[in-house]
Length: 565
Image 1 (cartoon, rainbow, N blue to C red):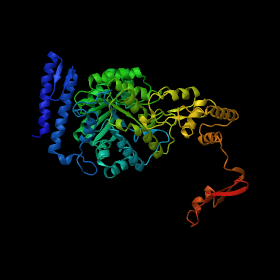
Image 2: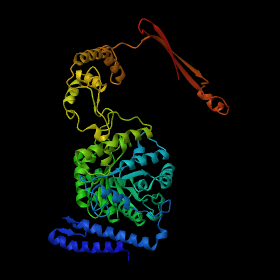
Image 3: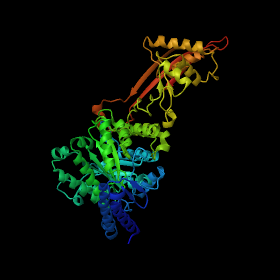
């Protein structure tokens, strides 16, 4: 008999003995760990889950040829990602054994390539998806939800290309997303379920209804039918050797509506072999205290026992997605889902560029990607560039304005201590502190620019104080008539140069003119007609002519400069 089966059988016997011990002593002893006060329901759920896995193992041994293989026909091995997570958390119990419980340990699950693409004006090619998947992997994201292979040709193409174009470590993190089987079709005959197996990913995430009202009114099924759909779908995918996560859609609203049925949905998934229960705030209307209460209830019932982790998936319709994600992790959720830069349907998903550093730096959670935190700003801006989106300058942690200081009072305090108006050192997330110049500035704003330009070498050099005040007055005067200097550092630098002792202007501009010339620019209505003709492409040319005067010694020189583009 296979050694793994023997080990699982021994473990099941110990759990059975533990059930008896629980009734007397209140704890269960296993070969690898001691779990205090394990509920009987959790132990019984594990036994049913274990029997499902044992059956799957037997089927794997007896009917290897019948199991759906990934695209490259290589066996699917879910172990590498578990080992990576275990190493990151310095734990001897990987996800297969113990389950992850937050906030001490948190798994990062990115869904930018699937849920993120449901945002308005977000559309990326399969090639760009491959680029972003590689970026996420190098940053240390644990799971990368890459698409829904059963929903569109582009996602199907991605999984086909990923099997040959991505390295093994990246492929081991990919997740294929889908839904439970249709109401009247067995999972073994459901084409959408088969497409998940054909994707070749070691992990599959399926969405299931976790709200009784949604089941009866939207899905038009009975509550028992929904539970059967969850059990059958999860069980079939597990039997084919895949790790299964279940996104419980509308869970938090469903828990408020009928908590017993919401927990029944969780129980059905766990009994069928699901490894993670992802609780979803699908409509984005839940408040932090509601998230905390419901998450705690699920963690108490299922989380951290026998390989089951609890996750959270939030939307930002009330601006609470990040707060709700952090609160859920503090309540015991060991997996957090989100997207880079918070892209997603309607107002977006939880922003991982905010959730990850918040958990790492303010909650002190252990995460696989924590050593790469200094690359977070680079990741955020690179993903925006690949997606052809403008970065959010006001984004926490990674935005260009996240550590920008404008008010004179603030900048003066920052010169005394960098923590006076910053919650972290910007370098921890790969960002930088900036000082802005405006009519709201103080003298210290100008002195900071002078120091950055290298004109002040020593901290006790006060020779620039009066000149800094004069520059500041000039800035305020110009801004009062419509000028702005926040994005004009070069103009501020020129003011500093003009205030330098002994400064002489190298030249004076006498006059200038600009000429623009277009060639072969045609109307859009005739572009297609002329596309067949062999003509030079349309061009546009600009010429800038500048006359300057310089006065070396006693001579006057007039220079004529011409620039063409």
